Length: 361
Ligand SMILES: NC(=O)c1ccc[n+]([C@@H]2O[C@H](COP(=O)([O-])OP(=O)(O)OC[C@H]3O[C@@H](n4cnc5c(N)ncnc54)[C@H](O)[C@@H]3O)[C@@H](O)[C@H]2O)c1
Ligand SMILES: [Zn+2]
Ligand SMILES: [Zn+2]
Image 1: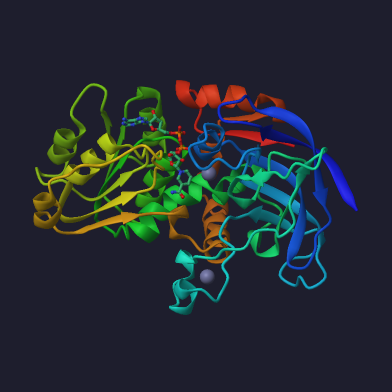
Image 2: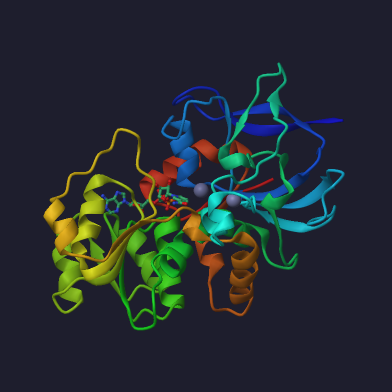
């Protein structure tokens, strides 16, 4: 059986998001069909729309979602109909070079649904990050469903499906932030503020939030930043050094992903410190740095895909912390919107008005 549902599609580079009827097949082997409850609007959806990820239009957007499994393929054992799940884009294969080395967080062959969702005329859709959850139903690999506590607010915990996990993980997994560390986070949207929360959770004693938008800085302070720097007004490298005894932070996280913010991160970290790039650059961006500084300053320069998370390990753990009041996921949900308001949510992302808009389906 094929299910006809509404979904948010971008047909070509820069085209507006349109609501289309999409066809979602019943799950085959290894697949799960999920009724979507909520899906957050992540900056990566905007990157897709702008053609900055790849050219495989049309895209079915949305990838930060909670839902209920409605059907599973014949051989699926990990989830069953009725399960409340957060969708993930890291269903590890267990067989690639990374998995074989015991580092499944780097899996090079993550699973997505094998069958394609389509437009009514049969045009195949590319689901954003293999999820496509701005839709009433979506089809994913069963491993993309992480079973979670059905009592937790779906809008809040769904954000773990991408941006919030990416930010928290950039701090605790990739950056390996330790008790007593100093951490600076450049860019305080959903991802950056989550990195602030992650650094605070890990016990960092100095957490510096940097943004060009003062509204974002207020929110970062509520979520765990000990200091804020408005980099539209002052040099963030100097400011971060001043706040860390003149040395720079142990870990600096770039949650913007532009050459200028990466350079700020590079020079705002202490000798032998760590830079974590979690913001996603566009294809035309290049970086120039004195190689002697790369060598001389030592330490490590890391990228963080999805916060180096393992969904089955990290989502339930973070939901436990949320339910214990130690991680304020509610603070990330600025507004709840309907599926026809995604374009407006992209505009608000630019205006700094929201941390996350969450579509309720
Ligand atoms: N690595 C991953 O796995 C992963 C996952 C999700 C999102 N992302 C990426 O992370 C980035 C942030 O996503 P988001 O959803 O938080 O976006 P967002 O638009 O909500 O936030 C971006 C923030 O950066 C600030 N900013 C912009 N230019 C700046 C500058 N020059 N200096 C300081 N601050 C600046 C903005 O004011 C805003 O607060 C995006 O590039 C997104 O694609 C990466
Ligand atoms: Zn693998
Ligand atoms: Zn995302």
